[in-house]
Image (cartoon, rainbow, N blue to C red):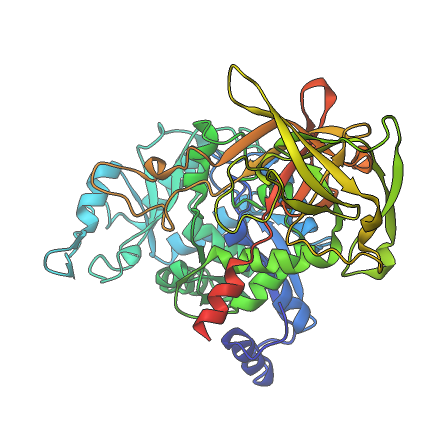
Length: 564
């Protein structure tokens, strides 16, 4: 993130000035149970950028303490996304699962201090005795001690060792911290430190049958790595007293937690739990579906790392959660793509245009500008012929008011070519569908040269039918119909807000032949249509597939102007 006077920087500067730490160490600690999304991106950039700003170091640590949901495939996907954003961690890659023995020994330290006990209560009874919040009275009900809370240190040590040895069935015993069952913070009411779970771990296999809970493993993993500033989103603020308690009672390095506002964006959901449902229940094609806010989905959609960096820098750091309009993210993307993308012409809903006074079989080579924002991008040749493809929307038999495109008797300019005048059209007698538009061209109007005195109000794009490349286009829209997908009525879920028209596949479109050289990841502006990226997929008959990244309209610029 860019250099700012945000509250985290101020906090770190104060620590350094008072000599609390000599080197800043942060960490990005994803759980490998899903793919990273744009919400993780904010935390990722804060963690890595703060370390860079203060000449420190940032660890990549996988908090992999839940074997039922974690997998090495998620680990590799997360690493790909972090590298795509431009961050490296060199030899600072760690796993909480590497610390299992260390964590087990720290649990013994806490037991020996009389601050932890083995509990036999089933999960339901434990939850009942912990107490719950009463929404009607706006108060937290008092908790009750477990009948096993006062076991002796010796008995707890013996039972905990037997838990590790596999002497008890799953779910029959837990190790709990002995804190305060009357604490108004429910997380401090004797939280579970270890549970029995005979589940093979993707890294440790069947070595362990007990696994540490996140709230126990996370702070002590930070301490193990001597993390000075554990930066996390605001929902973990309530966890901070427990974070501090485990560090204090285990008598380890004094890592400290600092919270900042999490990222929420309109028109999408930023929860791995909900994203997993979309993937597993086949509402999308996978974690990299271009409609998802996952970094892999955004990458496949055509987003650039630079646009995401710009977006995160613009929203900055705060201590209060808020929701950002997705139009700002799209604005950052448009700003970046406009500078970097070459222009080409493509027709995604083709209609034949026939130039009646053009000599048949004659092909002329014209010149087009690759990028008006970048002179160094140069020019490219265009083939112009008697038969062209134009957009179906660029012709109207009976035009509405202020329609400046083709209709009988009207003239338009063909981009980089000539002015043409519509002389008629062909229609399928059985369906009434327009099958071709006929016109004549004015040879004196080539490319809008200085001698061209004719003025027309419309300019349309085209592709030569003799040299066009057949392509498949995929037009993406928001996955959800509502700005806030989780705002649902009684008896409904966020799945009821899914937009049934979020993807339109057009199997036969046409583009300039130069796109035959495009490889997956190449980006272009299709003139008048938007920005597109070459997808890894191929369509029918081996046609290249191009995903629409975004249209050309900058909604945020209009919103920002109106607000000012």
